[in-house]
Length: 445
Image 1 (spheres, rainbow, N blue to C red):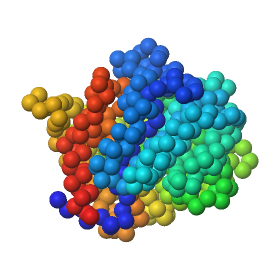
Image 2 (cartoon, rainbow, N blue to C red):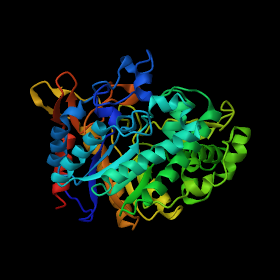
Image 3 (tube, helix red, strand yellow):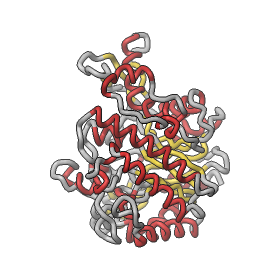
Image 4 (spheres, rainbow, N blue to C red):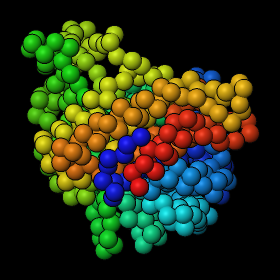
């Protein structure tokens, strides 16, 4: 097994707070929008929720050992805003802050570099009740949260991300309504997206103002959008429209280009209200861009879609995981585009992974065979290495996920983990993919 990545390339695993922590009523934590959403009947598969999840709040030391045993050098995780600020702002909950201090110390003691994400979709419910991301006070609260976290942890945590997958926050939560808080209003979704982007810039400035030596970024998700028939102008336009909706709307403002002109024209009166100075704030300088990549889509022109005029087209030749098609080349295409078209000086794959229908071996209770995930990771690592060899500044790769967890609206019905979690006993069992990942990393040492 060959690992030809540079010796300083960062390999890691990733999780997020609501998906693994549990202990939703402990330590001074107050509800987030995901607590409310998952406890609303019919919103998640089998009405699952994150009340217990992987009980990471109590088992974090064991989980750090899982990370150490993999041999990876870094761990990407998120902090629960409402665990640190029960009211969303103001007085810090010391018990909540102490949990993250202990987690960080445990990581560092085991030579694992923390990569901390401030927001992975779990907005404090009390802030949502006051207007959420459409209320400028929420943006100020996020700025306070970011500055406070860096003030407390910045001497130990150097790598920070403001937001995870802003498209999901805005569009899945406020347009499609399938994620918390479950709204279905496209105009509001665009305003939410704007608020999230402004809060990102405000947080970057707040963290910079501490004077600490930090590596600051953000982690959008990307969905490469290809025309079903590249020779058809309308298919090319359909793909461009979806690219503007999913990728460019969130990416262009980060580099000072503002919102894409073609999308502004397409959205018309639906466009968000932009206050003076907002676009300059969004474009605050970052050190790296996180890249969350899972799959790609192909599009053809559709009159049925009155806004984007797009329809996705299944690709019969592609294999599938439990929930997505598999197209490793889309990872390379995304990394190349971000470097050549946008000029990002540092990139990390901050999420990439696959869900499969994993089961404990009936003959060996300590084995979980997942050959599909092993091949998925091999093929995507090949594309990442291809990017590195082409001098694209890719500096790290975080596999989603360390362990099976609460997968949002899908609840516990799909498994993305390198470790199998028995939710009744909280036992963690390394899957074959975890053993493969460890061998892969060892082969590069």
